Every structure is written in C-alpha cells, then in structure tokens.
Length: 267
Image 1 (tube, rainbow, N blue to C red):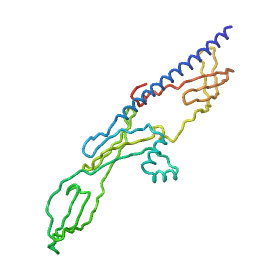
Image 2 (cartoon, rainbow, N blue to C red):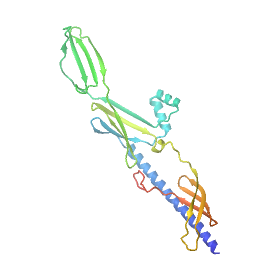
Image 3 (cartoon, rainbow, N blue to C red):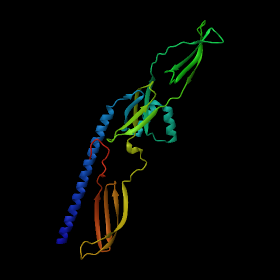
Image 4 (cartoon, helix red, strand yellow):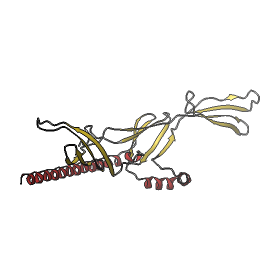
C-alpha cells in the first residue's frame, strides 16, 4: 500500500512540474510577443534623424521575411534580383538611401589665357577649394561665348555602421561628407535569428552516466548509466539505471538563462 502511495505521489509531482514548466514557458512566450509588438511600433514610428552635419541614423526594420526582401528588390532593381536568384544567394538586408548635394554659391575671377587673349580660363571646384569633390577646368571664349572644359571627380567616403541596443533594436548609422545631404534612408532586414546558420533540432538524444554517493550509512554507492531525449531545447526526459538495481525516470525543464535577454521587458 505504501509503495502505491509513493508512486502516486511521485507521478503527481512529475505532472505538477510539467504543468508549471509549461505555464512558465507560455508566460515567457507571451512576454516575448509583447516585446516584439512594442519593437514593431517603435520602428514603424521612427524617422531619419540628423545627428550632425554628415551624420544620420535610422532604426532597422528587422521584421521582414526573405520573400519580402526579394519582392522589394525585384521591384526596385530587377537586374540585380535576377543575378542574385541565379547565384542562389540569400538576401539578408536591403538598404535604400536617397541623397543630394547641397547648394553652394561660389564666386571669383577667371584668368586670361596666355596663348589666346580671347579666352578666359576657369577652374571651378565643388563644394570649395579645400575639399573639392567635383572639378571643372576649361575656358570661355569672350567673342563667341563658346566654352569647353573637363569634369573630374574625386573619391569620397561613406561609412555605414550597424548597431544593436540592449533592448533589441537595431540602428544603422551613416557618415558622409558634410556637403552630402541624406534625404531619406531605410533598412529592411531579416530577423536577427535568421542570420544564424545553425538550426536547432526539435529532438536531440542524450546519453551519459554518473556516480551515486549514498548519504545514508546503510545505503550503497553506485554507478548509473542512462539516456533520454531533449525536446525543443527545453524539455529533458531521462531514463537511467544503476548498479543498485534501480531504474529512474527523470524530467527536467530548462529555465531561461541567468543572463537577461535583450528586450524592452525583462522576463
């Protein structure tokens, strides 16, 4: 009779543990959904921010699927879309930036051409003499008003930096020369977990053993060997036997790591 009661109590305790672990897991999922909804709202209401001359920032929309990115690329640049599709490549993110050059007013004097006094030599630089990006060098004929010259362009740097805040929001920073104005910018991306190549298996098998040290003076030490399965990286069901002629059935639930997740709401 006593053994039956013990068995019933043990089964009841296991069922209670399974129910509590399921409940905790369900609450964690609800909190995660709330986090995602808040992030979506923040990102959707975000706009391009000018931090200083030549420096801008915009939140990254990482709630896209690969299909979303493919369709967007196909509409905006079908040639590139076809090339990526042929190569069998996966689109991770898509940046779209619209920029213009700032208006500048320059003035000065030309020089009389030493070989032909009817021509005035001009050398124009944009945006200014020190950091010129666009240059025009040529001459204008005073009699006919005919001009001829050559355009030349220098290289200029653009730096894009992707960051992640502790609350799980990505930001894209862009640094440009001060005379380059960013009119609009948006970055669509896959979710962070899609960047990982390693995919966790739903079912994994466990095998191992251990040493049993009895805490009772009348007990026996022993060695155990067992195996089990891991479900969804959270639920562990293990069966083992030992040299004391005992068989044990164990269930373990993996709680969240001690380190807090990145999110707006701490679980």
